[in-house]
Amino acid sequence: MTIRFAREEDILRIDQLLLQVCQVHHQGRPDLFRQGGRKYTDEELKVLLQDKNRPVLVAVDENGWVEGYAFCILEEHGGAMTDHRTLYLDDLCVDSACRGRHVGSRLYRAALDLARELGCYNLTLNVWSCNPEAMAFYERMGLKPLKVGMEAVL
Image (cartoon, rainbow, N blue to C red; front, side):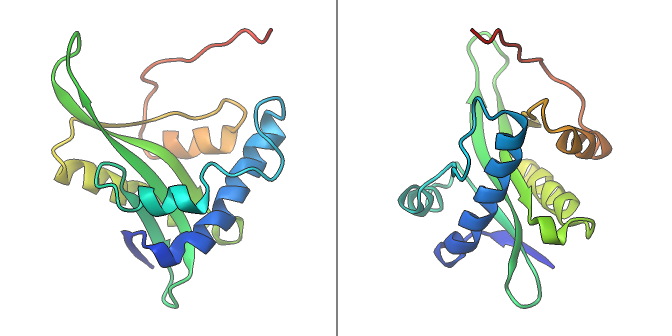
């Protein structure tokens, strides 16, 4: 398996993985996530893949098959916060058929390496509470809670 930056020819496969992620979220929060939805259109993905501040990593097998992805966002902080850079891990997905083969941990570690290369202070992410498998994965990777999001459904 190789981790590399995503390319335009990966979009069809990324689309399939985006559907898997949305399905997981739809099962956990059908009030917020549509059945069969996707986070990005193909046109949005084409633009995103050119944005140096929004790197997308993919894990590919020896045949070039994309087994997973990690969408990242480089953030600059200041103002009331100390000046620092953060790599925000916006979305990490491993194909359901490839789970248990350490694809996710390899993608996560590649994102950590990228954060270090970019001079970031930290790597952050959010996890939906309706996705306990993802929460457990990130805890195994050594992440600790940074803040807690709360809601009141009206």
